[in-house]
Length: 356
Ligand SMILES: C[S@@+](CC[C@H](N)C(=O)[O-])C[C@H]1O[C@@H](n2cnc3c(N)ncnc32)[C@H](O)[C@@H]1O
Image (cartoon, rainbow, N blue to C red; front, side):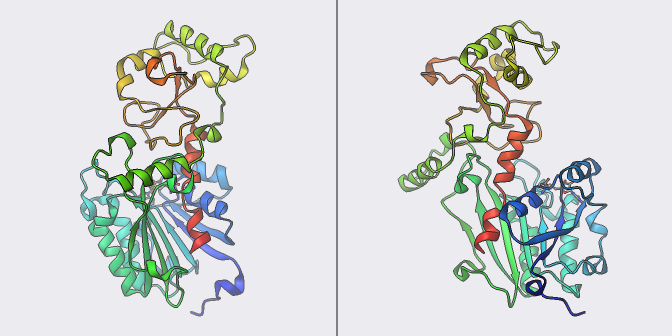
C-alpha cells in the first residue's frame, strides 16, 4: 500500500502506546513538532479518564498484546511512542525481564514489525535504567536492525536539561532508512553523558574528580526548585505557627485547618505539610530540599503514603543554618501533584525531537 509521505502532509501521524495519563503527548506538544496523535493505547481505564480530561480524546482501551499488524497498518503512522511497563527491568524488582508477563505486550509489538505493510519511520522508546542490559532490549535492537532501522540510545536525566529533577532514564530513538539522524556519529551507540548520575548525590563516593566536577556543573546549570512551585512558601511566621498547630493534631485530625487569619495561601498548602510525628520517626531518612535547591529525587507512586525513598520533601522555612535547624522547624511539605507532574513532564523528550 502506497504511503503518503509525512513531508507532503506536513504533519507526523503518531501512535502513543502505553499512553497512561499522556506524558509523552505533553512532551510532543512541548517539543512543538508538527505532529498529531492519531491513536493512543492504554489498558487502565482510570488512566484513560485522566488522558481524556487532559486531551479530550479517549485512548483505545485494551491490551496492546492483542493488536495485529492489520490493526496498526490502518493508522499509517509515521512515529510510534512507546513507554512500556518498567517493572520487569527495575533494579529494585525481580528483573524477570522477558519472563515477566508485563513485558509480553512490548515483545509482541516488536514481533509484528516485520509484518507491517506500513511500518513507522520513527520510534521512541522510554524505560528505566537497567532495560539496556535486558533480553527485551536485545530483542528490540535485533528486530529494529532486521527491519532497517538505525538506532541511537541514551541514558539521560532531566538535570541535563536544566530541570532540578534526578530521574535517569533509558531512551531509544530509531529512524527507518533512508531517514537518518543529524548526528550520525551517535548511530548504534548507547550514550551516557555526562557520566552516570546517582539518585542521592552525596552517596557517589567512588567518583573521580572529573565526574564530580561534571556533576557540580550540571547541578549549577539547573533552575532552582522554586521555579517549579505551584504553591509558594508562606512567610516564616505563618509556617512556624503551622508547626505549632500541627504538633497538636492527631493523625486522624482533619487535613485542613480552616480559616486562618485570612492566610488563604497557607490554607491550601496545609494539606501538604508533613506531620511532625513522621518527621520525628523518619526524619533521618527523608530527602529534604529547599526552594533554592537545584535537584530533587525521583517521585514514586507511594509518595504521600510513605516518606522513605519515595521522593523529596520541601522545607517551607529556609533556615539560616541548615545543619543547626531541626527538620520540624523547617516545616516540611510534600510537593503537590501538579508540582510532581511538572517535574516529570518537563523532563521528557522535547529535546530529542528538536535535535534529531
Ligand atoms: C510506564 S507507564 C507509561 C506512562 C505514560 N507514558 C504516562 O505518561 O503516563 C506504562 C503504562 O502501560 C499500561 N499498560 C501496561 N501493560 C499494558 C498492556 N498490555 N496494554 C495496554 N496498556 C498497558 C499501564 O497501565 C501504564 O499506564
